[in-house]
Figure 1 (cartoon, rainbow, N blue to C red):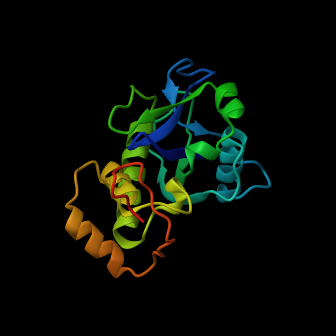
Figure 2: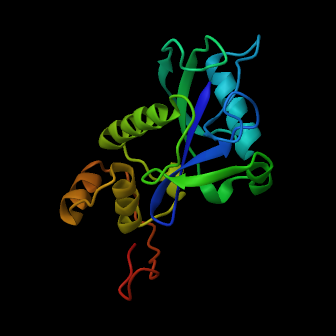
Length: 194
């Protein structure tokens, strides 16, 4: 399994990458992944990789696609199933991230990646965009409380484009899933947002 771990910080959607520590392609940028254990399902293996890397459990993850092109891994015939995960960067175990030599990269400015890992990220981002079109994302990447402005900035990072504020607000409120906490956030403006 290979895990496309998405996080959100500084108004950018980011992906967690590390320098591969073994051949082939040692020292090059890679997704975090691992082999499926004898007594593991694919999902179990992906959850293990996520926990071993971030220290987090109960992370939203979704299977994306099986990558099986012959020759995709120069070491031999390897089929990889990609999962994407959404984590709150502020909750990660920074010591584990550092121990893996992992680093967050903006999806809009990725380094050169090994094998077909860029394709895995591209397919995962497309799947995330499809999910964001149908469901409300927010708590997975922003936390339990956020403003509509925070949410709009997240969606702009996911879709890699500016969104119309009025249309976005109308669509989100029509979902009827948000609750007004009654707490005003004045960090973005004097007037503030609930």
